[in-house]
Length: 278
Ligand code: AMP
Image 1: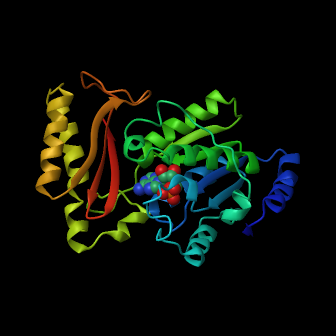
Image 2 (image 1 turned 90 degrees about the horizontal axis):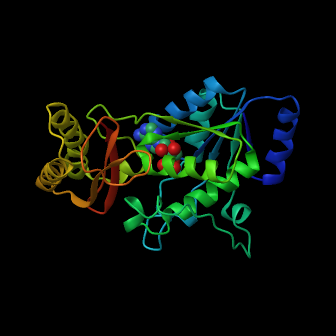
């Protein structure tokens, strides 16, 4: 496994593989890897001949009051895990390498980035699409894998790839959960013991919503109200709970197969997201 910090160097190495028409797979991450990341890496490993993983805590996707500086980092542990997964190349650039002095260009996917997480994090997705497009341009992968944990992000990336005619196949992987149902996240370590326990209500309430739909409840308002009630009982502070079309992220009037129920909730200062598809 080779680790590159410099754009020019990773490009040079990847050019050699491209000349030999190798299928290049790519999984972007912010590091502090867990089984959710590793599941995407396993999926990408199966589909590609050369597998590239990036580790970059991208400052432009954090708001001014968000956790950029305290976001967890553990490069040595990450590299060990990536080696075990058979990753070929790790891209680990500095902030200066990605955003040198004078940097001015941002990519925006309209509308899709202004709903759901985009309401409380108005600059977040612009940072995400910008860094992902930069990484795509640096690595030029044939395919890239994203997690459905960040469902809105995956929808936005797919839209960007389509709109900007990028020759990259976007695959998504399922949400990987802790044994008690909490979606794995690098941010889960922020939770204290009692918050961690309370946070299990997120997946429980999503499962309740799906069961309620399956029992014949077609009303998104009732479902959203039910989810909110359960979360509040567990001291969660709700950012949003929505029932939307999984393709355009617009609210639905009736639940049907394929509807996305998504939420963002604070436990203490930690904001968690989760979702389920009916
Ligand atoms: P991050 O390091 O948080 O930027 O996440 C990198 C990638 O891993 C994104 O595509 C996420 O959607 C994905 N991911 C994060 N957590 C999970 C999880 N619990 N299950 C599946 N994918 C995940």
